[in-house]
Amino acid sequence: MNAEISISKNQTIAPIDKRIFSSFIEHMGRAVYTGIYEPGHTTADKYGFRTDVASLIRPLNLSHIRYPGGNFLSGYNWLDGIGPKDERLMRADLAWSALEPNEVGTDEFLQWCERLGIEPMLGVNLGTGTPQSAVDLLEYVNGDLPTKFANLRRQNGHEKPYNIKLWCLGNEMDGPWQICMKTAEEYGRIACETAKMMKWMDPSIELIACGSSFYDMPTFGSWERTVLKHCYRYIDYISLHQYYQNNDGDIPSFLSRSLEMEEMIHKIAVICREAKMEQKEAHDIALSFDEWNVWYHFQKSGQQPPKWTVARPIEEENYDLADALLVGCMLNTLLRNADTVKIACLAQLVNVIAPIMTEPNGRAWVQTIYYPFLYLSKYGRGTSLRLSCESAQYDCTIRKNVPYLDASAVLNLDGICTLFLVNRNQTEALNCTIYFNQDWDYVQEWISLSGNDSAQRNDADHEPIKPQARECPNTKDGILTIDLPPSSWNMIRLSVNNR
Ligand code: AHR
Image 1 (spheres, rainbow, N blue to C red):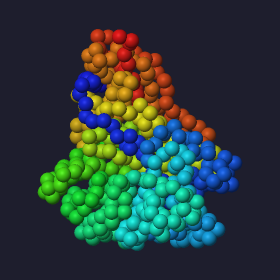
Image 2 (cartoon, protein in one colour):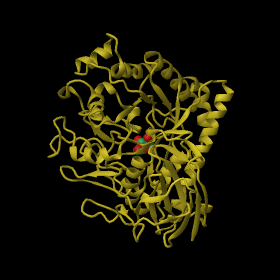
Image 3 (cartoon, protein in one colour):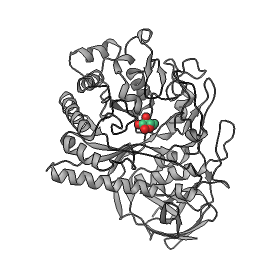
Image 4 (spheres, rainbow, N blue to C red):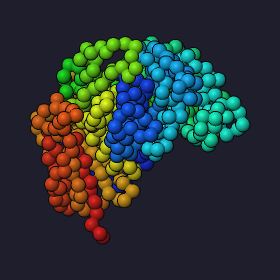
């Protein structure tokens, strides 16, 4: 099984926006309560947030965290989550059939982000919410005038505006599962009016309009066209969401899904360019892939935790090696599309479809999918390079000519070239020849994530799937030949001698 890659530091795609290394915390399941926040926990800080969880989040070097939802957003009244905690009331969360105690709200979340050095990306409720409630929240968060909601923030202990720059105009408003779903016309209109008012209140913010909930939505494409017809002028990004499943255990098909993700990105980018032309607008809008991941294990298990409880333990995936490989391919896809995708959120961050898991009142640990994200976020900064790749291919149930090799490369700011390579072949190594002329001299580091069974998983007690440093192979005359193990994710760093 062979593959070839040609790479040059002069063949670039675009600078990589740091915001593609973002994630998502929703008031859902145990993401907040017993996830990031658990006042009685032995590691809780004085605000009630778990420091063991924070210490697993920090290395991910996240740019932004999207909050507070998700489907939860469309029924959330932000006023329920501010002010003295003992006056906050329990509410029924219709999105997830759970109880919301409102112990964590806007101030607690924003201040937790401040302590972690991560920027929040906030959503306004366009389900049960109104343009006015959205502007009121913006005033509460960013307002600097002596006005009602800015004063309320001051009264609640935060004198200075939080100055949050990125805002989502609702969530998945095309979905029948959404509280107060809307047609494209209805959403386009309310998004337009909300966006107008929000930018009048604070012209420094950037706004993300809802695109389709996923690729197979019957209105995929037409939804975006209609929404952009209404609100192009006032927005900066349109969202994409996609989760992949492997319910039938067909791993070759599952691992090919990132090619579909790439098609999705290309289609929406074209629609954005067409909308710009048709509406004779001057500014470009970019893509915000603000929910992406693998998601199926919990649903497949058939578990149904009791409804109407606080921290209802739903959608707790236990990821395997194959999931980490697809996450690696999806990250490569984001890097290869760095010219159009400027924001992306791994959904989610803790306990709910997440790389980080916690036991209530117990340990915190990391899943297989944590590692590709960790390394991409650490070494995927700089300029995305345009690779020329030839790879042996396979046919699977859902697609023909799937390359065994999935690749991306980044020219880091220090001149190192970092390659991220996935071998989709489960049984054979992929002999990969990399031509890089004299741009780099030697392999400084090779890390891989692999295992002898794609179904292997980590848990709180065992970590069979973790990154391993491998012996760096020699290069000769600007050529590197390397055997990528079966079912493996790899990071290879090419460096220069002191010339
Ligand atoms: O991330 C979990 C859920 O998936 C979100 O609440 C929703 O936006 C999406 O359908």
